[in-house]
Length: 396
Image (tube, rainbow, N blue to C red; front, side):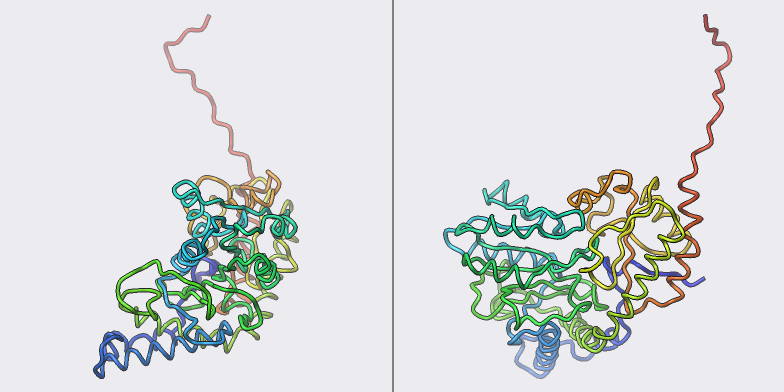
């Protein structure tokens, strides 16, 4: 049977149109964009075209507000480190308890090694940010607020435009990790007070290893990677032309599909979620079901270990995950679900199904067909093993 791929929040299949757009950059348009001759000029033109396509996807006012990076992690790190370097007299960072490890791991490092004060804002049982707690910690010491647009595990959406405006009242910078949102939700940065935004190509059917950081014009900025003057001296190093071209093509494809595909994908997700709840007792949907990404379903099954469930689904040809791919291998329950105070009986039994524009009705039907049997098998108690007393032992 055809495999079913439902782990698009970890990575998405590279669109064939993206691959086709990238191929000439390896064999024909292979010059260094910084070179002045024709080969370099052709590569530079390809990078400019891709920049305009990403600009259009996120609704940036100017194409030079797009800085190409290696992906979401670099973009997140650069935004936070830059703010701490340029915001004189400010040494506090505000984040949520459910941020991606790209943000939280950096913040822990900054706290222990540089004495930066990190303010962590809690979420409620549905994964929604405590806005009152957020407002209470904003101060003249705040250098940057970094809050995700949409959570990678639950899909819950934060009101980032509103939060950015609140941040402006204390003169701090606002950054959002929009890796999961861009390409899945309409984004128009011109209508917001967001200063910086991170995105990654491989979440929107582009190649891995390339992303972008939006930096609003006029935002004070200090680069993290020093060397040449590429990217207007904001990110040194010869540009990854094939990756950038692939990101540009992926952005163009997303522009053409996001409005129509979002509602279709949401209907498939709802069918999956409702079907699982109807067929399997003891299920619990994690996260706000009204403000979330159209493609994400985080659902837990009582009395089941998520790693075992994911493994058996894999044997059945179905790919999903038990949380963020960036925390794969950890034996601890998801920090996102712990922050939401998910009930203990569901905490270790959560799996994430994340759909894409490649997902069809047959994929959902397949999952619904096999899940009840797999969950039932995992819930069966292990047969007791007879105790065989070793020979020669005599008990008084």
